[in-house]
Length: 401
Image (cartoon, rainbow, N blue to C red; front, side, top):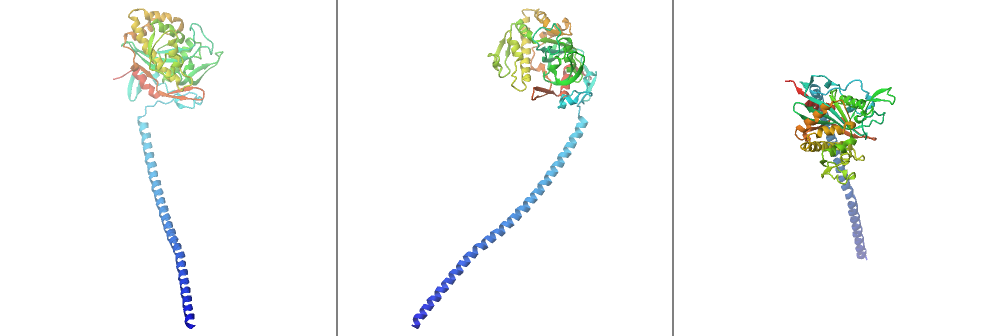
């Protein structure tokens, strides 16, 4: 009995011991993850603090670096300003213009330094070459003869504007092309011609504010002279574009290479890159075409005008070999469609110089430097007048040695 009780007691004790051990083991197992998580948490905090201070240090270093960069840039800017002040040859804006009428300072004309003779530019002295004449040529889009004066609004506009440099000593021609949309100061008037004023607008409009004859031409001349820093133009010639077909056919047609995309919309033969011999009204279509839905279409049209002028002179030269009087006949043909302040001998001399010189090429053409911009209403061209001055010096002046 005692033995049985003792055995039971021992079993109970073992059971209790096992239970206690199990509980202790369970307790240790439960406590162990907490310590693990605690260690992980401490490590995370240490890592976060390390990252924080490292990031803060990097940010501090970055700010210091940026500050040094800005300081260096400021020093460079200051040096640039000093260099510009010492080396700049920019001509200031002419006084007295209505600056409130333009949001772009590029549209303001420069002081008329080229009205002086001689002039000093970049430390050198230049004088106007008396053998090189400046003739402003205008293609007018009125669409009829120019024998009658017109009322305001009916005079037309100058679609093509070219300044010819005629070297009478060497019998050569060079052509400065001026975009019709160039913004400059022009003279305006009302219908009664009682009030005259000025405004900054597209150069093409200068012809419209006149009588469609002498007054219109002189308005374009004076506006162009302002645009070109007071450069003096010797003569002008305006020809209505409607006479193009007659001019073209007088030399047996003109073969051109189509330079502009989309011209086949107007004539199926006008595919870019193709050679086409123009006849009749095709000539006017070729020089006047522009896609009004395309930005800067008037600028692209200048490529067509340059191509036509170049090829027309070739055709004229070739035709003159079988008809020596062709130049005289051409000017007789366009007499009623032309307004000029030149005598017949002068404009015949220009044509003869063109025939006597080599064929015109791209090297004979220049364009007023600048940038086009599309506004809500129309395209405009902002001329870089300072960059135009060296071109004018090259074409019309000689350097004093």
